[in-house]
Each structure stands twice: as C-alpha cells, then as structure tokens.
Image (tube, rainbow, N blue to C red; front, side):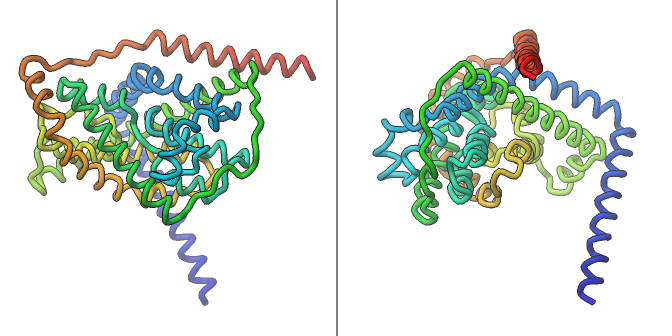
Length: 363
C-alpha cells in the first residue's frame, strides 16, 4: 500500500512539474517582448559588469589552487586562521578569495578542491557557509556609486557582509571543526597550469552569465503577470521596498533603488549577504554534485540577519561623510566594457580551439 502511494505521489510530482514547465513556456511566448528586453539587458549586464569584474579573479584563483601555491599564500594569516576563526590555516586563501572575488568564486574553489580530493566533503560543506561574498568592487559599483553616489556606502555594505562571514566562521568552525587538506599536493607551475586556469574561468563565467539571463527572463514573466504590483498594493510597500524584494531574486536589481534611502541600508546589507536566488542558482550550477550545499543554503537567512545588524551598528562610522558628499554630487555609473568583454570571449574560444587542435595532432 505504501509502495503504491509513493508511486502515485511521484507521478503527481512529475505531472505538476510538467504542468509548471508548460505554463512557463506559454508565459515566455505570451510575454515575449518583455522577456526579450529583460534578456537583452541581462546580456549587457554580463558583458559590462559580470565578466570584467569576475574573470581575472576567477582565473587567478584557479591558477593558485591548481598550482598548490594557496598553502603559502595562507601562511601569513596563520595566527588569524588558527586562533581566531579556527579555519584550517592552509585553506585561509579560499576564505580570502571567496570574500574578495565575487559570489560564486569561493564555493567554486571548494568544489574544485573536493573534486581533486584535496579537501573532504565535511570541510567543503562547512566552509561554504562563509566563503560567499560579493566583493568590494561589486558593492561599491552597484550600491555605493550607482545608488548613493559614495564608495564609502559600498564599503559599509562590504564590511557588513564580510563581518557576518567572519563571525560565522568563528562560530561554525569551532562547532563543526573542519579538517585540513586531505592529501599533500606538490607545487606545480607551468604554462598548462595558467591556460587551464583561464579556460576554467571562461567556462565558469559562461555558466554564470547563462544563469543570469535565464533568471532575468523568469523575472520578466513574474513582472508581466503583475505579481510584484499585487504584493506592493497588498502590503502597502514603497517602490524601494518592492525593489528590495526583487533583489532577493536577482541581486543587481539593487541599482534600481531611487533616491538615497539611508534608512534601508541594513536591509540592503541583508539582501547582499543573502545574494539572491539567481546567485544561489549560479553556485548550484558551478558546484554540480561536488559536495552538498545544505549548510550554505540553511545559513543564508542567519548571515543576512547578522549583516543587517553589523550594518546598523557600523552605519554611524561611514554615514556622515557619505551623506555630505552625496548632497553635492551623486555619481552616475556608466559601464562601457562591451568591446573588451567580446575580445575576452573570443580569446577564450581561440584558446580552447588551440588546445583541441593540439590534442587532435597528438592522436
């Protein structure tokens, strides 16, 4: 009886999933103009913001991990890693890169190390909690300059998110006690190490951009259905508050905040720490099945609340100068990285083509 019930429930689950896909396809056709515009803007955002800000960091981090140099880069931070955060000292580089490079980079590194057998499942799962951060350049551009006209506000958001990650590391590493490197890795640095790091970064960026475009299309469908307008009228929310809700789906919507709502800064920090469902989808796609992300997903609300608290407490240290500067001038951010990004994509394609030709000649 239980077996039959399970089969029925499984079939119902498949039926509802298929129905949902059909409804999504119908919506994409019905709201094609809005979806097209949203996808175009997403492509521009990827070419002008995502690729220029992430590619170099991702390539360098891949090279450092592949070569084994990460252990030596982590050595100067040994006292902080060992006695303050309790992060395995040789893995402190992953925390640093996850905090400075951009949302998916830290967990992507953990996934690569787990796939190579360098770290265990347990270590990767624990460190995923605090190795996710947007990076100072991202916050300064999307929030500090674009909304408030001040880099100091962007740094306030970064300090809030980084502080939450740091405190989370201090707490969870003492409870769960992550292990260090599983097996010794010898230092190997060659031309192949560099080219493989560049190729890996290019492949990862393609996945990230594809996910951003897909999530933007979904967001356009939700917009066209009037769901956000309904929520706004139902709860009496302001335009900026509904923008914060939209940002929980796709983080770059924060640039659409109007005016200079300093009272919303703790909430903005919370959204930035959460990252948005699009960022979570990118991380899931990049991680694959390397290790479980249950701790990462469960920790998002806690880290978001902690970031909001830190932002609220630190706001007086950043706000006075920022408000004074913003009264006189609000900086408009105008990204124009389209041509360099296209060149970068072509270079990655040529690099992959060259490797394929070399491989064919060997055969």
